[in-house]
Length: 224
Image 1 (tube, rainbow, N blue to C red):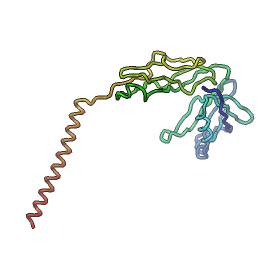
Image 2 (cartoon, rainbow, N blue to C red):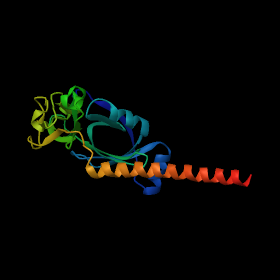
Image 3 (cartoon, rainbow, N blue to C red):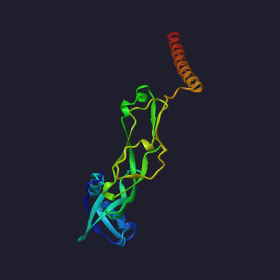
Image 4 (cartoon, rainbow, N blue to C red):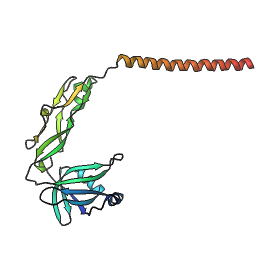
């Protein structure tokens, strides 16, 4: 539960195009923008390490300090490098701590190792990994937990099985399947025959090499 806020100091900037953005990133700064609420959009730059630490800290709300002002925000969007995964841009949304907002929260499965289906060799499939919720900014949980410790092969859990704090409302379909325990994948006849053919090919190649080596040895002995 986001019962506290994390402070983050940022520096206002004037957008000057892609060349300026690349220079910021080379200097270890990440560009971003704050918008929403009753204020105008404000572009800023923030130290990459400080941003990373702030986003990893507990709590959905950040207290962003820019100049002499401070405002509560939530992370609305972030962009990342396609290869390195580094954050390249962030969008912050101003929030009123007394008004509920919508947010996307990760679904966390707990008790996986204790599930009978896992012990039987089953495969836990999780088609739904996030859920939309509504709550006050400081009440948005870091994750919504669902216990799968009782799942046997063929069983499933729905969003309605989630453990949800009383001050948080789930906005998605409660009947949506979050996770299912699938039976172990059995090898098909085609796969078995392919495996036999591959093994036969390997044995045949080995025999050929042995015959060739024997022929070469016999030729050498004959020459001598």
